[in-house]
Image (cartoon, rainbow, N blue to C red):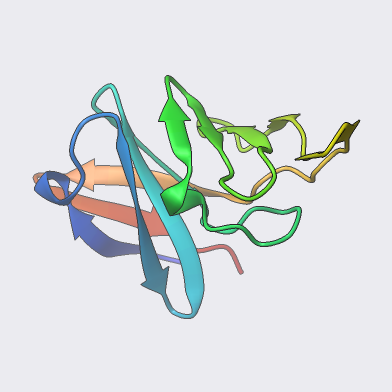
Length: 110
């Protein structure tokens, strides 16, 4: 599968994230210290919108039940938390990213 342009570098400010629909896939692009990462935009626990989550360093927290994910690897770091209970969410799907000039491109997996 080929790389597909989905955004321009000036679309995503440093240390922020933005969600894009690419061929029916909701993908979150994160600009973390000038490097770009792409992960699925929906939390693996109950589908919370990660674009509305809190980004701190390389960790995004789901706004629904506070699952935490490493945006550089997609790994679930913590949660979800529902009342006093802590569960475990699956890791996020990740996508390969490359930047050419000002174009952010990702490779969708088959």
